[in-house]
Image 1 (cartoon, rainbow, N blue to C red):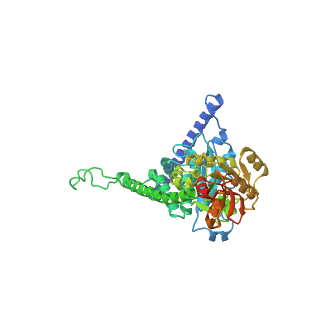
Image 2: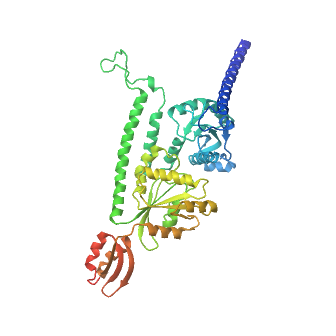
Image 3: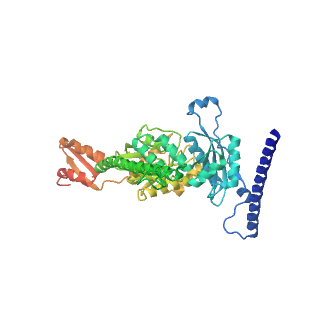
Length: 497
């Protein structure tokens, strides 16, 4: 009995090995045929080097395994152990590695432990398994070798790609969109921020619901004995789940719209008082909150992590000439920001669209700062803020390559290099803000009685004082003010003025 069982196991093992060898032979034959096409010049389009197409390229320096056991106490419970995988379809190998390095930073921010990272050169992602069936098998070997429990893909995968890749690698598969949504869920603090994240997560999950519900029915169905109105297939479990999610999404949109009303009222109040507004926008971790703190002393949380700021912070600030304005810190952007998030956070991003000036902060020490600029401008276009004046603030100048700084300052005409950490260039930036803010349009000279001290205060707060002289009759002001305030000062304009 034992020998018979052993023989059947050996036969099964031999059959599996034969099948594997057959598949490998087929794959090699396909590559040889494709290679012969390339040599004969019969294939159109961009061609990749054969060694690039035939291999997953390991990306060095991504592992974040703990070197010291004492660090464990700073980690929450047991971290997920992840392997990163990207498909390199265009650009240079440096671009592909930078993209995977950013994915590693996202994974770390989400609380994962990065064990390895690989990229594959392809014309386009495989429609079935993202990286192709053969490379998926190789990825499964890497997962087994490293002991990973999650694979993170550098792109948004379709529901079918997620299912097929999970079937091959036998561990959980997460795409870039789900990873960013997870980070947002961890960092959202305000009621509105949490609602926006929940809405984005539901939009993402709706087409990805899985389970056995397709074949199950809530009603009896068939020729059942339940009587009238119970026959038919009924509503399947998955259909019920989708309907409930859609109902929750509709409710969440109504709640977000109500919260938006409150912020609109505050914004209208600032407009009524003619206080100019400046929005700080930029790539995640570019140093926006640090810059806000440096300019206003706000004391906002600063953390060397991606998406540390999700809830907009508005602070009062003053130009060197004494003009008041508001400074708003906004959520950071990232390449390929999921459209679910752009839609859900649209109301928050309106701070950028409704501002008088955008401070576009970019990390000068980043390997590809020009890509950060392009990614942020794409989102700014999405929220309809293309006509707002922009100052490009190249932050972290103390850590940046001087040649890169010079090149960026030459390419970006309206730009300045600063360091929010050391204070370098901040005085020059404040002068630029002062020059760019919209100026009151009416020039006026008025002798304001001392009994109207509140009016003088408003001129200082909302206008631009050119000169101020205290006389026995009152305060003689020369100033630039908006039309509403000019009308209030009109009774005090001297007849000779």
